[in-house]
Amino acid sequence: MPQHNMPKNWQPPAPAWQANWDNSEDPLVVGYFGIQADSPKLLDAWAQTALVGKYAPDKMEQGTYVDKAEVKNYLYIAYWRRSVYQQWLTADNTSVWWASDERLNEGVGYWREIIAMPLDRLETLNSSTQPHGVSAVADELEGPIEEHGYAGGMRDRIPLSENDKLLSNQKISALNEGLTVASQKLNNGQRVIVIPPENTCVIRSGQNWGDCVGEQASFYLKQVHPVLLKGMKYLRDNPIDTQCYSMRFVDTKANNWTTISQSFGLGYAADIYAFENWAKSHPTHLAILDRFMNMVMTFGENLQLKLWHEVVVLPKEGCEFEYINCHKNTGLLSYA
Image (tube, rainbow, N blue to C red; front, side, top):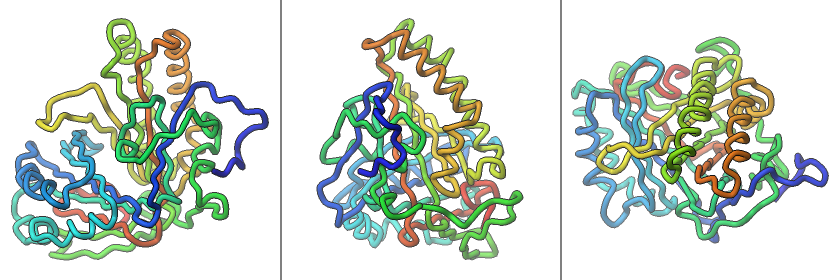
């Protein structure tokens, strides 16, 4: 793994593990499938037939969030190997359902964001040996590793960074300007297909405080979580300053949509440097780091909070976003 950014004689402030896969020839795919509605029932009806069976995803999760437009979103997150995803995609109850004109007339918004995850463009980090997200379908967790906790650590964990700067030429110079996203508008604009630019950086960064009890739970919810929310809101609301195209802060749900003590931020930025620069120097992230380190020092080896993330720098091909009757600020739709 590259170590170009690691300080000399570096010692990480806390242990962390990364996911490894044996078969790099069959990379990963994650699909985010969402509905903008008062209820998830229409999306549930699709998922209950489409996300099961022979080509079912290796892992599936659910979540909800209220976006900047104050619209409620429900979503499914599904991970596949690419070979299985391609077979799943051709099944009648998947692509045909999304392509049907019936979706245009149901009075709700649908969106799907399909992300290719080549292993040389992917990195993960887990603060414990309990894997989350895509790490839960890895062949192994390696660690503790040294390549984390410093500026540029994300790039050092991405194999392609050894010989590719992973830069984007798609910057936001003014809201809805200066960014060219390939798109196709169908059905008088009710359906929009968007292809995200190459080297767009996608991060899914999660928090699990389900094992925290008593004082630990109180510390996290009162001291850490509020500053995390502030940081996610800053990224969401300041695309020009941050080069963050989109940020959603999602409450993870059980499979019957009941509440569990987990959440994650799902963000898309011009490139990996946008997130790196925010993490390195912006007051909102420095506040998050400060509160987290306070929690580490307070509870030491008894700390039960689990943090994790996965980062992928998107390839030129293999990703497709579709928005059906969604409001204009959904995902990358505002840049189409």
